[in-house]
Length: 473
Image (cartoon, rainbow, N blue to C red; front, side, top):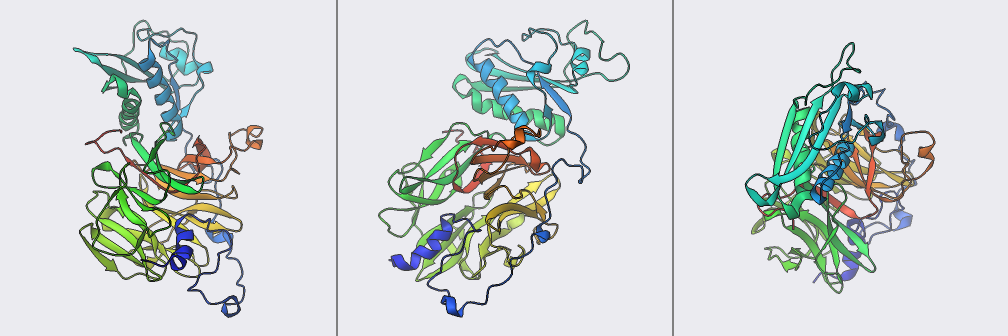
């Protein structure tokens, strides 16, 4: 059994201690008198600054989209309209206009759309979504999304549609009536694929651990912040949840301060392992065939990888934790003492001198990136770089502690926890109000468009598509 006093210092890091705080002394560290003389704080200039509107990056304005404010005919109709609008706002691919800008209604499923009038209100795209009974199946629901391009050129604003225009894109998702919300996310992913050339990543869920009273518990939540669900026992300490084989949630669990063991699912079924020690970090490869575990034993941490029946120890620096897999077999983790850095395939890539934590790979439209947290003064920020550490780009700046980045399945969004000093709104007046602590989603290409989706604040956040074989719980 791992002695408790040897486990506590490493456990503090695994439990998500903000890397910006003063680091507590570890048993393995030299005494304060033997520590190096106080080094100068690393310069923030190395991290760059966050562009607040995209002008410095040369980004074009987002195309403007209106979602037709339909007179809904039932619960499914209301759900699909709310979900699609919210997901499009979160996606960072469109500037979704307020319903108040719509031409005079009312609008039903069959009301002809005067696209010239919509263009006159500034809309470049018009999206109409609705639910109806599935053909030849009375117990299922059909969700329909229709995207229209508004006309350009002289007279377009006053052009009157004599008949129903033909949509440029039509997507249909068939769903069980009880699964309309999940199906609505799939509809959005299809619409984004047709409109942008890259399907969205909203048919997905996040998993994380959060303190509840004296314990820590695992939770899952949908990509838009809805349907929060607890996983596992309420009277134990859970760490490092990750989606594993079959889409099930694996995590490290300790009861009564015993060493952490690997368990799976709501019932916390123990997973037998060919290694001994306290499990503090858990990760699975994208195809779920390989695992990576950080194991604390005899006062040392080791990284093991392979399938769960045949794990092999990897040579890593001291205090290795938070492993994560990327494409083409890449692996990242944090390690080192007294300052931890991010490593990719055994090489340090985060800036020297900055405490770094929680790396994650993002396969973005602009290429493969690595995101991680660095301590900056009394705060923490999310940083992006390529997988060799080059091209450093700051995604947050001077807005409290922003930690545990997790990338969406389509690679365009990053979710993270923030302590509550982030501002909300884009106008000068509204930015005087703080958004409050919680879970945020931001487009990687346009980080100033970050939006809060939940008031929860946890650690070890992961974001992955819902496993097709099991669907939503």
